[in-house]
Amino acid sequence: MSADQTLLAFETDCHIFEGCGFPAPGLHSFVFEPLFTIGGFEFNKPMLLALLGSLVIVGFFWVAFGKAKVVPGKLQMIGEAGYDFVRRGIVYEALGKKEGEKYVPLMVSLFFFVWIMNVWSVIPVAQFPVTSIIAYPVGLALVVYALWVGLTFKKHGFVGGWKNITGYDKSLGWILPLVVVLEFFSNLIIRPFTHAVRLFANMFAGHMLLVMFTIASWYLMNGIGFAYAGASFVMTVVMTAFELFIQAVQAYVFVLLACNYVQGALSEHH
Image (tube, rainbow, N blue to C red; front, side, top):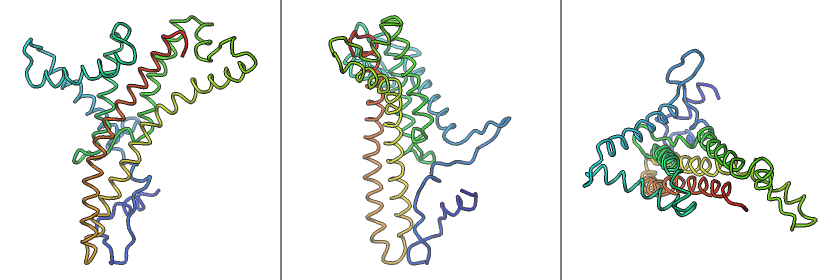
């Protein structure tokens, strides 16, 4: 898409009954010009939001727990509630208290990173979910994938690790080769793919809906179209509220799946 086409896609002077078509959102809504370039490396808006999100998370927990008190203040209470939600509500439920405690810091980090990357979608000025760019969910999924594979071979050894990954079980008889092939592709290829795509697809679709209703509200503000613009604006508000719920759910699901993968790596049979 050329620069002219990109500009036209975001035309703000176009309204219904003025002879111009609806400027529908599309893939151009996920393409950003670089904010600056250093040695061929382009730094764009999603990168900036990811960096700011990381700083916000680190800063919040630093302030909340930097000088922890027996009687917690408001920030410490919020921080403890969030930390405890992931620890008890996700990690302990999937891995148990004894085995899961060592993975709590990683899972808490993943949860809040994914959540705030999603929440940027409804923050004024930012208004873009970083996880709707496939590279970010893929990167996070690869972290979990590397942990799962590493734990599998560490726990079971080289031969045992492959048995765990492929579901090797002599009692399966003649269907064993089929199971081994299916489990191999399912675990080593499909699992990390679906882990990333589940998060990406939900955030991509949610952002498209928000952009569509937002643009439609503006586009319909002309003549009789004002009545429809009001309905579109109401849908924008409703979709924003729904998106807030989905953003939290997707962070929860991403971390829950990560815990399940770790549990599978540590168990004798997955």
